[in-house]
Image (tube, rainbow, N blue to C red; front, side, top):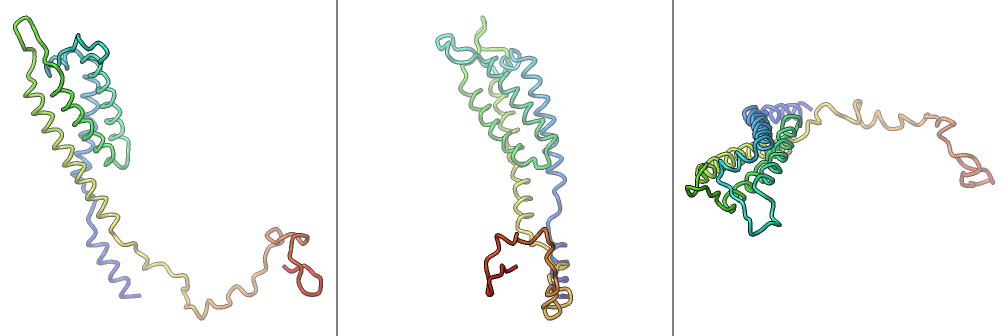
Amino acid sequence: MNMMTHNTENTLRSAPPRNAGVHALARGLGFFSLALGLAELAMPRRMARMAEMGEMPDRPELPSSQTLVRAYGLREVGVGAGLLTTADPEPWVWGRVAGDLLDIATVALAPRRRTLFGHGGGSRAGTLVAMVAITALDVYCAEGLRRERMARQARPHDWSRRSGFPEGAQAASGAASDFEVPADFRTPELLRPWGHGGKASR
């Protein structure tokens, strides 16, 4: 028992602590998602203009840039709320990573916005650089949370204070021999199997 307790104490000391920095970063990303989502919902036209996202008049079946910005705003608000209310932020941060990749593809493939003076109203290259930087931050946070989870799962359980035989196996032998089954726990007599002598056994 002393050896088990000693090994358990070593295991508890060597187990990695909760990464407060990564959890604080995840919470900060939650606030960022909420702020960005509300901005996209309130100012979709301006946000699309900042990324130089134009329209495709020859493809009316496709959603407009403002519609896309609003939809992505709803996604950001949902992810932000999840990050700020959950006890396990890892899946929500990975959700942000997936959303980041979708945002980058949307901005990169969208037609450029045209004005009377040519392209203008924003910087697509600057927007893409900012998106890549945010994606890298999200991946760093998600990876930190994943490593913390894997280390926690690999940590052995502490069984040092548990024993099914506190006084030894010999003392436990026959300890319940005088146990009387309560009447309401017994099988009704009509349902009991018939034993020797024609009587139902208990």
